[in-house]
Length: 98
Ligand code: SF4
Ligand code: SF4
Image 1 (tube, rainbow, N blue to C red):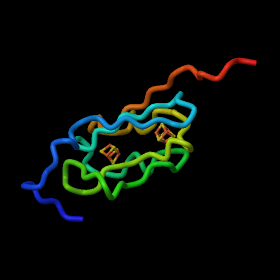
Image 2: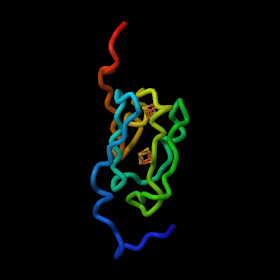
Image 3: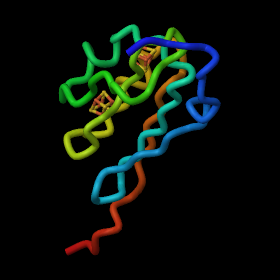
Protein backbone atom coordinates (compact mmCIF):
# COMPACT_ATOMS: atom_id res chain seq x y z
CA UNK A 1 0.00 0.00 0.00
CA UNK A 2 1.48 3.38 -0.93
CA UNK A 3 0.57 6.82 0.32
CA UNK A 4 -0.55 9.53 -2.08
CA UNK A 5 -1.17 12.86 -0.28
CA UNK A 6 -3.52 13.93 -3.07
CA UNK A 7 -5.66 10.94 -2.25
CA UNK A 8 -5.45 11.57 1.51
CA UNK A 9 -8.78 10.90 3.11
CA UNK A 10 -9.69 13.42 5.84
CA UNK A 11 -11.91 10.76 7.41
CA UNK A 12 -8.78 9.06 8.75
CA UNK A 13 -8.40 11.92 11.23
CA UNK A 14 -11.77 11.14 12.70
CA UNK A 15 -11.82 8.86 15.73
CA UNK A 16 -12.76 5.29 14.95
CA UNK A 17 -14.63 3.71 17.84
CA UNK A 18 -14.71 -0.06 18.21
CA UNK A 19 -15.99 -2.19 21.09
CA UNK A 20 -16.19 -5.77 22.19
CA UNK A 21 -19.43 -7.74 21.85
CA UNK A 22 -20.22 -7.33 25.58
CA UNK A 23 -19.94 -3.58 25.07
CA UNK A 24 -17.83 -2.99 28.17
CA UNK A 25 -14.46 -2.29 26.49
CA UNK A 26 -14.22 0.51 23.97
CA UNK A 27 -11.20 1.47 21.89
CA UNK A 28 -10.97 4.83 20.18
CA UNK A 29 -8.43 4.73 17.38
CA UNK A 30 -7.01 7.83 15.69
CA UNK A 31 -5.30 6.53 12.55
CA UNK A 32 -4.32 10.07 11.58
CA UNK A 33 -2.09 10.28 14.67
CA UNK A 34 -0.60 6.78 14.51
CA UNK A 35 2.97 6.69 13.22
CA UNK A 36 2.94 2.91 12.91
CA UNK A 37 5.80 2.45 15.37
CA UNK A 38 4.47 -0.95 16.48
CA UNK A 39 5.09 -0.32 20.20
CA UNK A 40 1.52 -1.18 21.15
CA UNK A 41 1.65 -4.36 19.08
CA UNK A 42 4.84 -5.43 20.84
CA UNK A 43 3.59 -4.66 24.36
CA UNK A 44 -0.06 -5.80 24.24
CA UNK A 45 -0.26 -8.73 26.69
CA UNK A 46 -3.05 -10.37 24.70
CA UNK A 47 -1.33 -9.97 21.31
CA UNK A 48 -4.59 -8.64 19.93
CA UNK A 49 -3.25 -5.58 18.08
CA UNK A 50 -2.08 -5.77 14.48
CA UNK A 51 -1.45 -3.45 11.58
CA UNK A 52 -4.58 -2.63 9.61
CA UNK A 53 -4.09 -2.75 5.87
CA UNK A 54 -7.20 -0.61 5.32
CA UNK A 55 -6.19 2.43 7.45
CA UNK A 56 -3.06 4.50 6.94
CA UNK A 57 -1.35 6.25 9.81
CA UNK A 58 0.32 9.64 9.75
CA UNK A 59 3.46 8.31 8.02
CA UNK A 60 1.48 6.58 5.31
CA UNK A 61 2.15 3.17 6.83
CA UNK A 62 -0.66 0.97 8.13
CA UNK A 63 -2.30 2.12 11.36
CA UNK A 64 -3.50 -0.41 13.91
CA UNK A 65 -6.58 -2.49 14.52
CA UNK A 66 -7.56 -4.30 17.72
CA UNK A 67 -9.29 -7.66 18.00
CA UNK A 68 -11.75 -6.48 20.64
CA UNK A 69 -12.88 -10.00 21.57
CA UNK A 70 -9.37 -10.71 22.88
CA UNK A 71 -8.77 -7.28 24.45
CA UNK A 72 -8.92 -7.21 28.27
CA UNK A 73 -8.98 -3.41 28.49
CA UNK A 74 -5.68 -3.20 30.40
CA UNK A 75 -4.82 0.16 28.81
CA UNK A 76 -1.19 -0.73 28.09
CA UNK A 77 -1.54 0.38 24.46
CA UNK A 78 -2.91 3.75 25.53
CA UNK A 79 -0.14 4.26 28.10
CA UNK A 80 2.64 3.26 25.74
CA UNK A 81 1.52 5.08 22.60
CA UNK A 82 3.74 8.14 22.10
CA UNK A 83 1.18 9.79 19.82
CA UNK A 84 -2.11 9.43 21.73
CA UNK A 85 -3.44 7.43 18.82
CA UNK A 86 -5.39 4.92 20.92
CA UNK A 87 -7.63 5.35 23.94
CA UNK A 88 -9.19 2.52 25.94
CA UNK A 89 -12.37 3.00 27.97
CA UNK A 90 -13.97 0.42 30.23
CA UNK A 91 -17.63 0.61 31.10
CA UNK A 92 -19.52 -1.39 33.71
CA UNK A 93 -20.82 -4.63 32.23
CA UNK A 94 -24.45 -4.42 31.15
CA UNK A 95 -24.99 -8.09 32.02
CA UNK A 96 -27.28 -8.56 35.03
CA UNK A 97 -25.40 -9.50 38.19
CA UNK A 98 -26.11 -12.95 39.65
S1 SF4 B 1 -6.12 -2.55 26.24
FE1 SF4 B 1 -4.52 -4.08 26.70
S2 SF4 B 1 -5.30 -5.99 25.84
FE2 SF4 B 1 -6.49 -4.33 24.91
S3 SF4 B 1 -5.44 -3.85 23.01
FE3 SF4 B 1 -4.63 -2.44 24.57
S4 SF4 B 1 -2.80 -3.48 25.38
FE4 SF4 B 1 -4.01 -5.03 24.25
S1 SF4 C 1 -1.11 3.32 18.02
FE1 SF4 C 1 0.64 4.41 18.92
S2 SF4 C 1 2.02 2.81 19.74
FE2 SF4 C 1 0.58 1.83 18.30
S3 SF4 C 1 1.64 1.78 16.32
FE3 SF4 C 1 0.39 3.67 16.37
S4 SF4 C 1 1.76 5.27 17.17
FE4 SF4 C 1 2.73 3.29 17.65
